[in-house]
Structure formats: C-alpha cells, structure tokens
Image 1 (cartoon, helix red, strand yellow):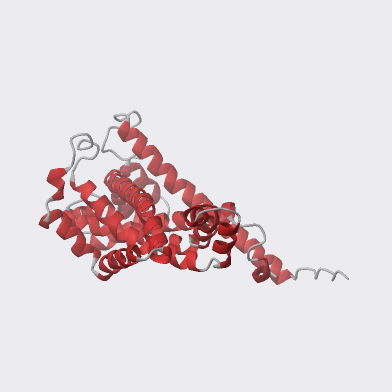
Image 2: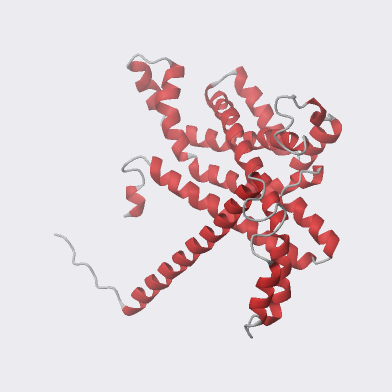
Length: 308
C-alpha cells in the first residue's frame, strides 16, 4: 500500500526556495567567471579584437567611478578598479593553470590505469607498480619539480616540434612533473576501485571464453573506473591547487602572476584574496563537472539502496 505524501511545511518550502536561489546565484557567478575568462583568452589569441592585448575588458576608471557613486560600495571603489586593472595578467595565469591541470590529469590517468591493473592482477609487475606509487607519493611534489627542472634541466631537452607551444619551456617540465605525481595517486584510487569489483566476475569472464586480460578490460575496468570517480574528483581538485607549486620553477601560472603583481604593488592581501576566489571558482567547477560525469556514467540501479 503506497503511503501518502506528506505536504511540505512552510519552513521546508522556504528552505527549498533558498536553495534554489543559492544554486541560481552560483550558476550566474560561474557563468560570469568563465565568460570573462573565455572572452579574455579569445581576445588575446586573436590579437586584441575587442581591446588591446594586455588591457582589461572593462576600463578600471569606469568601474571605480561607478562604485564611487554607490554609498555602500564607495569605500571599495579604488580596490575594485585596481583588481580590474590586473585582470589581464590573472586571466593569462589562469589559462596556464587550466592547461597544466587538464593535460596532467589526462596523461596521468593513461599511466595510472595500467599501474593499477598490474598492482591488482600482476605478479612481478605488481612490485614495480608499488615501487613507483610509493616513491612518487612518498616524496614532496615540489622536490620532484626541483629535480626535474633544476637537477635534470629537462627544459633544455624539449623537442623543437613543441618548443613554441608555450612561452616558456618550463611549462612542459611542470606538466611532466604533475603527470608523474598524479599518476601515482590516481593509480591508488583506481586500485581500490578495482578491488571492490567481486572476484567472481573474473571467473565468470574466463568461463565464457575471455582471457584474463580481456576480462579485466571488458568486465572489471568498466565497473572499477565508475567506482573511482569520487576519488578521482579529489585528485582533480588537488591538482588544481597543487598547480600553484609550478610557480616555484618559474611557470607563469595563476599563483606566479599573482605573486608578481603583489611584489610590485605591495597589495598582498587584496591580490591573494582575489587569487583565492579564482582558485575556489576553478575547484567548484571541477567538482560540479565530475558530479555530472558520475551521473552520466552511473550503473543503473547502483546505490539505489542507499538513496532509499
């Protein structure tokens, strides 16, 4: 017998309305943030079709004058104008942060999958995978970047075919460092997910004529990779924040740009407050994106018991 649905109370309706307004404001802020970044990047790539390269999209003086006319915001008018003036440099730095994060995460995933599979199902190869993951997870990422850049001088070995992609060859060193380090962490996340798949499915796959490798590829991995998405989301978020370490090897990403502006203007608090908000926007975007991915690839019926 179906139970009657309890009518929502006034408090519950108000709470739901507040959540809807909050979600709407969050979406609007995200659209404004990414719209500004996209327009700034395109304007720079096309040689300044909207405003001269290096100039903000909105005149700082106009922003400052507008806020100065609003009594509540007048005290912040000068700060707002200064932030707007710095937006071209921050947009350039954010582009490198996004590229380093995205490329390193994707390449790290390609390395992490075979590492995880060999760790779970291999014999001698399991020890190789274990050694790799423990070495990379057991040493500081900043130390690894220093070894690759200052110790091994890998920037001087960048092939000519890709040397002009970025303004500085050190960007490739940063991508390599984050890829190798991220692969170790992703491998552990995927290993745990693979071990959560019932061992009987390996037996079932062999029983229908699949080899062990085919069973892993067609049966285990499609399930295990879905289970790994929440943990993989954590690595995505960590990598966005850890990308700031690239600034210590002179990669002009977001943190590096912000630090340079702060050192020139001595407005450390304001600059790093704005930078923190930008990192927060990137992290929230990554989290929401991975939620959508998880929903899209979810196995039908999985987790229904928890929802009830």
